[in-house]
Image (cartoon, rainbow, N blue to C red; front, side):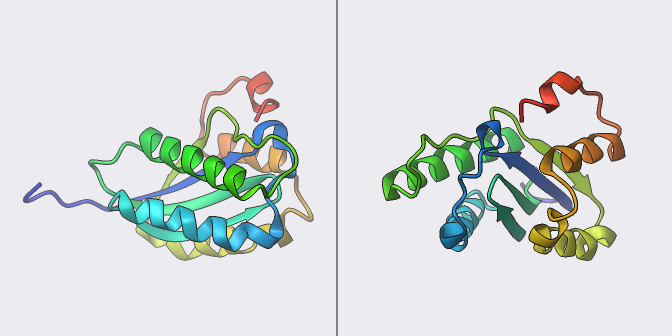
Length: 151
């Protein structure tokens, strides 16, 4: 699209279904690289990615022609297949049904990258449920508490 200029930065957050601890530490780097490939194939820019055992944070520079919902669907479907094909889990692996998407300005990039890179340290002090609830409050997103418990 000629003469279309954009600067869209979005942090995408989603968890393993029922917040089970099914993202194996030994394979996180491979999962992150795989997701980075998906992001690039969608003509977006990977800025930061990190996960802990039960959820993932992905920070991208988003193209205006890319639907966040379609991008997340592609990531979830492809990584679920990868994890199942590699047989990294004895349990059935699935991502939660929804996701969170939070936009940032260019001036916040460094802060968001630092936050994502420090997930393990961060989650020694705060659960994913608490973190997600804070996102909802900070971004003033209307939500029903009962659905937050289901993430």
